[in-house]
Amino acid sequence: MNKYQDAFEKASLCCLCTDTAEEAHEYLDILKELVDKAAPKKVEKNIEGASYCPNCKVVVANKNIINDLNYCHYCGKALDWSDEE
Image 1 (spheres, rainbow, N blue to C red):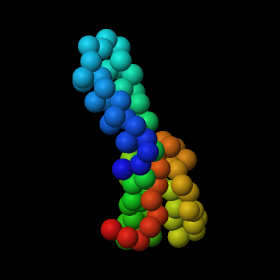
Image 2 (image 1 turned 90 degrees about the vertical axis):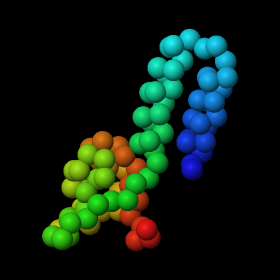
Image 3 (image 1 turned 45 degrees about the vertical axis):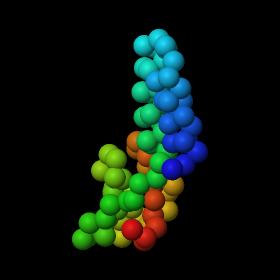
Image 4 (image 1 turned 120 degrees about the vertical axis):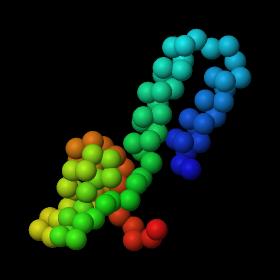
Protein backbone atom coordinates (compact mmCIF):
# COMPACT_ATOMS: atom_id res chain seq x y z
CA MET A 1 0.00 0.00 0.00
CA ASN A 2 1.47 3.36 -1.00
CA LYS A 3 1.09 6.60 0.94
CA TYR A 4 -1.85 7.74 -1.19
CA GLN A 5 -3.74 4.50 -0.64
CA ASP A 6 -3.04 4.71 3.10
CA ALA A 7 -4.24 8.32 3.32
CA PHE A 8 -7.37 7.50 1.32
CA GLU A 9 -8.21 4.56 3.60
CA LYS A 10 -7.83 6.74 6.70
CA ALA A 11 -9.97 9.52 5.19
CA SER A 12 -12.64 6.95 4.25
CA LEU A 13 -12.76 5.66 7.83
CA CYS A 14 -13.20 9.22 9.12
CA CYS A 15 -16.19 9.72 6.84
CA LEU A 16 -17.77 6.49 8.08
CA CYS A 17 -17.32 7.49 11.73
CA THR A 18 -18.89 10.93 11.44
CA ASP A 19 -22.11 12.40 10.16
CA THR A 20 -20.73 13.82 6.92
CA ALA A 21 -22.46 15.30 3.93
CA GLU A 22 -23.05 13.28 0.79
CA GLU A 23 -20.75 15.74 -0.95
CA ALA A 24 -17.79 14.45 1.10
CA HIS A 25 -18.40 10.93 -0.22
CA GLU A 26 -18.46 12.27 -3.78
CA TYR A 27 -15.04 13.85 -3.18
CA LEU A 28 -13.76 10.55 -1.81
CA ASP A 29 -14.93 8.77 -4.97
CA ILE A 30 -12.95 11.24 -7.07
CA LEU A 31 -9.88 10.81 -4.86
CA LYS A 32 -10.23 7.01 -5.14
CA GLU A 33 -9.83 7.31 -8.92
CA LEU A 34 -6.60 9.24 -8.39
CA VAL A 35 -5.30 6.74 -5.83
CA ASP A 36 -6.02 3.82 -8.18
CA LYS A 37 -4.28 5.58 -11.07
CA ALA A 38 -1.19 6.29 -8.94
CA ALA A 39 -0.80 2.66 -7.83
CA PRO A 40 1.59 0.98 -10.32
CA LYS A 41 0.26 -2.01 -12.24
CA LYS A 42 2.27 -4.50 -14.30
CA VAL A 43 2.55 -3.83 -18.01
CA GLU A 44 0.84 -6.53 -20.09
CA LYS A 45 2.83 -8.16 -22.91
CA ASN A 46 1.80 -10.18 -25.94
CA ILE A 47 3.66 -12.78 -28.03
CA GLU A 48 4.66 -10.21 -30.69
CA GLY A 49 6.67 -8.29 -28.10
CA ALA A 50 4.33 -5.35 -27.61
CA SER A 51 3.69 -4.01 -24.12
CA TYR A 52 0.26 -2.65 -23.23
CA CYS A 53 -1.06 -0.39 -20.50
CA PRO A 54 -3.06 -2.62 -18.11
CA ASN A 55 -5.66 0.12 -17.73
CA CYS A 56 -6.49 1.40 -21.24
CA LYS A 57 -4.74 -1.29 -23.38
CA VAL A 58 -2.78 1.28 -25.44
CA VAL A 59 0.63 0.06 -26.70
CA VAL A 60 3.33 1.69 -24.58
CA ALA A 61 6.30 -0.20 -26.09
CA ASN A 62 7.05 -2.70 -28.87
CA LYS A 63 10.12 -4.26 -30.51
CA ASN A 64 10.78 -0.98 -32.39
CA ILE A 65 9.96 1.39 -29.53
CA ILE A 66 11.53 0.58 -26.20
CA ASN A 67 10.14 2.65 -23.35
CA ASP A 68 10.51 2.53 -19.62
CA LEU A 69 7.68 4.97 -19.05
CA ASN A 70 6.60 5.37 -15.46
CA TYR A 71 3.10 6.36 -16.60
CA CYS A 72 0.92 5.56 -19.62
CA HIS A 73 1.09 8.49 -22.04
CA TYR A 74 -2.61 8.06 -22.84
CA CYS A 75 -4.47 7.51 -19.53
CA GLY A 76 -1.82 8.36 -16.91
CA LYS A 77 -1.86 4.97 -15.14
CA ALA A 78 1.35 4.26 -13.20
CA LEU A 79 3.23 1.39 -14.89
CA ASP A 80 5.30 -1.37 -13.31
CA TRP A 81 7.99 -2.74 -15.66
CA SER A 82 9.55 -5.17 -13.16
CA ASP A 83 9.82 -8.86 -14.03
CA GLU A 84 8.74 -9.89 -10.54
CA GLU A 85 5.30 -11.38 -9.97
